[in-house]
Amino acid sequence: PGCLPLQFLSYLGACDRLLKQGYEEGQVEEAMEMFQYSEKKAAEFLHLLAQFNDMGFQQNEIKEVLLLCGNQREKALEELVMK
Image (cartoon, rainbow, N blue to C red; front, side, top):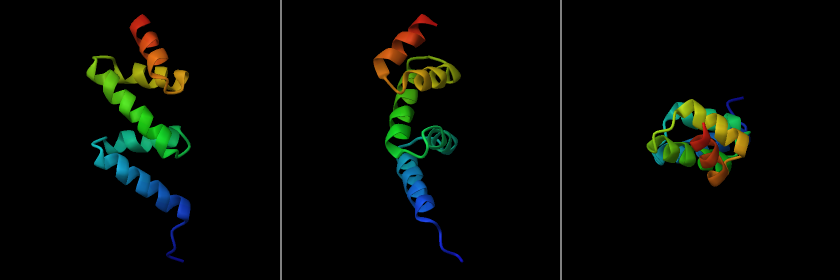
């Protein structure tokens, strides 16, 4: 009792690192869930989400396209431009 599973601790560590990069907590948690708690994939997703957001694309469209394209920047950008 009182012992946190290792998986949960690594999840918290990953979230903490992503939050320190300036991403919002809700987005970090959502990205971690979407990518089965893969910090690397969540970080890629958050980075691209922020980039495309800065370009003026709608967040819900960006999320959808990034998921479809598996975080492939060029492919996702093409899809967003065509929408």
